[in-house]
Structures are given as C-alpha cells and as structure tokens.
Image (cartoon, rainbow, N blue to C red; front, top):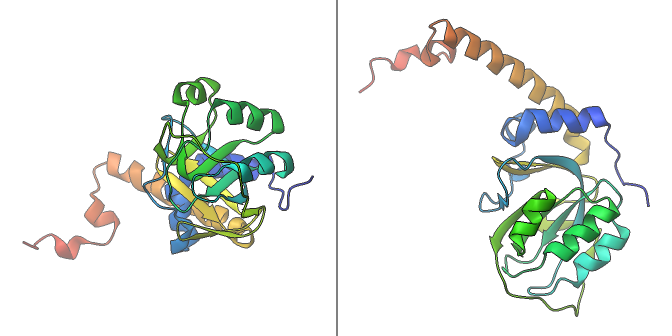
Length: 214
C-alpha cells in the first residue's frame, strides 16, 4: 500500500532539524500541538513522518494489530484510546512495527516493555506506562480521520515528535509550515549571534519601553 501523502526525505529531515517547537510556532495552527502530557519514552527520540490514524476502544488494542498490516511503510501510528492508560504496546508490537516499516508511535493511552523499546531505539510518545494488558475484541477505526486529544488527524498529516512534544500538521499546510519554520530558524540564529555580541533580548524584540517597568 502506498502512503496517502508522500513527503521527500528533504522535507522530513528538515522537519526533524527544525523541531516541534519551531514548527508549531511556524504553523499558526493552535490545534497542531497535542496534549503536552504525551511524552517520549526515551530522551532524544526524534521522528517526522506521515500519520496513520488508529482508534482503539479503551483497554483494547486490536485496531493496532490491524494497522500494522495496512499502514503504509514510513508511517507513524497515531493511536487514540480515549486517554485510557493500559499496556497497548510492548516489545512484540515494536518488532512487528519495525518489520512493517513503521517508524514510530504516538499514543494517548500507555505502553510497556520500556527497556525493550529503548533497546530497539523505536520512537514512542505516550501518555503513560502500564503493565496492564489489553483485550482484542473491537477495532473502532483504522486509517480514518480521528480526534487525538483535541488535535484532528488524517492519514498523511505530518507528525513531528521530539523531546519538546508532538505536533501534527495538516498535509495541506506542510509546505508553508516548513518554509515559515526555516525563516523563523534563520531569524533566531541571527538573533542569537547578536546576543553573543552584547545586544539584549529587550532590544532585539522591540521591548525597550519595558525597561523602566516595575
């Protein structure tokens, strides 16, 4: 199966380099930032890839197993569980995902087998960690648009996840967001150079009128 949206390696590498914080600001889309409680399992995780949305019933991970058979290679699974924390994902699914060409997981539920996930260097961003197992009895949605903790997600939207958090940019806005992000990075690089030469943040940000504020 081919991806719904194909991004170039240059775009994906640029997204990783710019990072979630810069691209969030560059997007101008408030809902692109997912719940900040969703954090990386291991420090230094960085991934940018098209989303493959999955909706699980609370405490049931059957939809994930189905997704691993039909998600396009190069995708990152974005799994909504209604915020119910359980061990939806562990070492078995990590190995299955890597074999299937899946490059990461963002889930608002929970995962387990943390040492194994870290050892495999598989990027996982999750609400929590739980030893509790899951059922395999229902699959509400696989590959269809979902609401992920307030952030709309469709197949092919760009997911960028790193130590700062997770953002999901609608596919139609990716080009402009990357361009704006690059411009923002260049501006901040120039600003930091001037800071090294003694300029102040108040001067560079046009805030000198606040110098006398108490």
